[in-house]
Image (tube, rainbow, N blue to C red; front, side, top):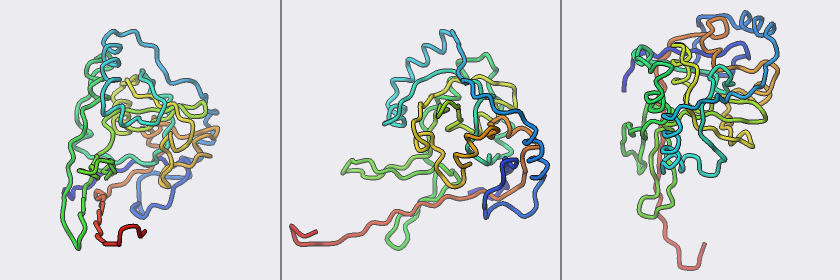
Length: 266
């Protein structure tokens, strides 16, 4: 696994959380960011949906809506497909970790709907991780924070390994629109002036359906405040702190235990 440094941009105007991996010294000033936020007008909770009559989009949406992996990813959720304006999305994620080489890659033009559809409805991600056996456990290690082990319900293969959703996802929750998945894609598109993207739209009824439940995300009170953090704020140097950091490696340990009991006993 690479030991090259990554570059972190962290939204600072809404306060910093307890993050053991944040260095003591960083670029940016939290107090200045807070002062700028205090002068911001109240958030206008308008729809992020964009009307688009492109036949390319409509055909693409019809095809992707039938994808088995999309339906599996959205199981149990109310969802639809459409085009959204990135500038109107709230961010519940505090940090974006950027890899310099990836930051230099080119993006489709704003009117290249074929390529934008491929960007937002990508093929399933290839599982890439180091696998070792240690003390009766299977250990998976990856620099991808979205690495997951999921229970399948299939007796012949009880566990499957996933590396995150390949789809660009937004969510509507309590009248506000949030970026649910695809922060890196959104950041690079906004940076390059691409504001409208096709997306999976989740109609969330709970914070859990929105996906903003981890302790390292902004709390609900901040997200529903008069001046919530927006995805576009990641591009404003005055509202973020920045620092270099070695990549974080996620570890998943799967342990198998065997035992015998007499039939009928618990």
